[in-house]
Length: 353
Image 1 (cartoon, rainbow, N blue to C red):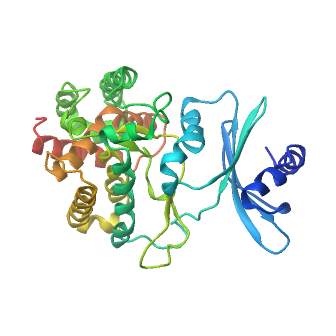
Image 2 (cartoon, helix red, strand yellow):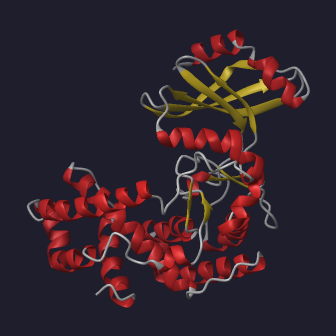
């Protein structure tokens, strides 16, 4: 995909006319304002294009999917085609979706990423977590049924037979890759001291903490790191208009998984936050529980335990495997040692050992 093809397809499919109807005015593509934001080889590409009505310039995001669609791309497109009816307040607006014999073109509202607008501090969670809680609460438990059959036919479900089989497979592969790691000079140094302990913990799976599901599920984003959070007004200190982007990992699952990615994975990356990690973690977990309570949801298990359980479940069912593989391929892993350290520490605290 290149800029010239976008110009040609714009004319061929009359996107100016189709998208112009959404804006209620005629628009034209600005040929020199086509920028590639991300290109995932032959799978997808993301572009920022600029259109104009003659007086105003309007940025638009164009995401192009190659056919046949991967399952996660089908999920994302369904979120924009169907899920937006129920959850539009948390997503960029969809302007147009066009499918031809080779590709699907998704045109949507451009909402600037938080990254680049602000330097994120723990205090900024006060803006993000209430929106996340409101998003989760909208489809929590049986509330998802109030949206009719919007999600029923296509939304992955965490406790489905398919995902249960995937979890079991991943845990078994993790055991095998731990053995391989003991024969790798780089990994052996990281794993050897905890090899037997990790294997004992893995024997408890693939569901290490049933409490996570017993405390309720909702539609979750599934990959809610800071790059996937956008806002029109992040420089405003009072109320951000937050939108979540990149919905490929959306599913019906415990909301605590979104909290783990949003808070704990960032704590794992941010060395400058680690001295205050306990305070940051506690503040975020308490805020999420308080916000969910405002929406009529009270967790039966203590929220911090649920948060730590979700972190360990996520780590043990796939992330540990992925990062061992990464190092075996000769790549770096910033998170592997953190995963192991907290698996042992929190595993003891939560009764896995």
